[in-house]
Amino acid sequence: MMNYAVEVRDLRVVRGGQVVLPSLSAQVEAGSVTGLLGPSGCGKTTLLRSVVGVQRVAGGEVRVLGAPAGSAVLRDRIGYVTQAPSVYGDLSVIENLRYFAAVIGAPPDDPERVVAAVGLAGKEAARADRLSGGQRARVSLAAALLGTPKVLVLDEPTVGLDPVLRAELWALFHRLATAEDPVTFLISSHVMDEASRCTRLLLMRQGRILAADTPRGLLASTGARDVEDAFLRLVGAAS
Ligand SMILES: Nc1ncnc2c1ncn2[C@@H]1O[C@H](COP(=O)(O)OP(=O)(O)OP(=O)(O)O)[C@@H](O)[C@H]1O
Image 1 (tube, rainbow, N blue to C red):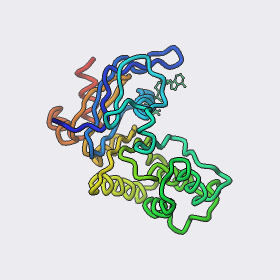
Image 2: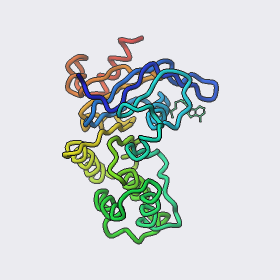
Image 3: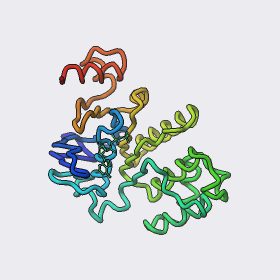
Image 4: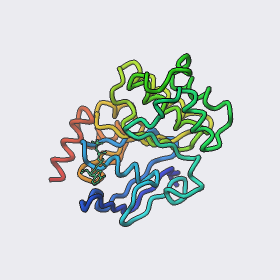
């Protein structure tokens, strides 16, 4: 039987009177680097918020590591990085991470470990509001890595980063996903060319999952030459 880190069944979400997810079902395989791809406004963030347990849902079920999304047992087992990096501007990099480590009860030497993991060694003493956007995003990512979570949910983590840094971050995700104690990644992006970096894909449009497959499987089943083309073919077939 497939081992799923995240299972979503018939999820319904209404935001501001608008049905954003009518009835969405999807799974994320344990140890995968799963990309959630779809155009802006299709409901990616809403789905991620539901997985993390911060979204009010109107129906259906979301389970993470077998427990209901948002339950207390998941608190230090799931990390979430939102689109807007949530760090305190008036604190240094290491102060931010020490604060978040204390909140979740992570080991005292964890801030140093995660600073190195995201390539910010040497920037520990820098105030967060004096960092570049990409550096601030990496502080948020470092905070999500504290306490060695089993599932990391990342909302467009590579937006605004240069290609070298982008490649480094994807390499980091794969290292963590294939480690002895693997982390499962669910990563949203509206940039289709990031699809090839994922081991599995969820293609989403207008609150629905169009396809769930490996990048290779998706190209084979659609006959497309790249994921953008596959997406267009699936949209064409669905309409
Ligand atoms: N706070 C809110 N109140 C009401 N509606 C909202 C709210 N946030 C988002 N929505 C609506 O929900 C829909 C899905 O938004 P969501 O942020 O999940 O999309 P997304 O795919 O993550 O987009 P993007 O790639 O631009 O971040 C959109 O139509 C949006 O207008």
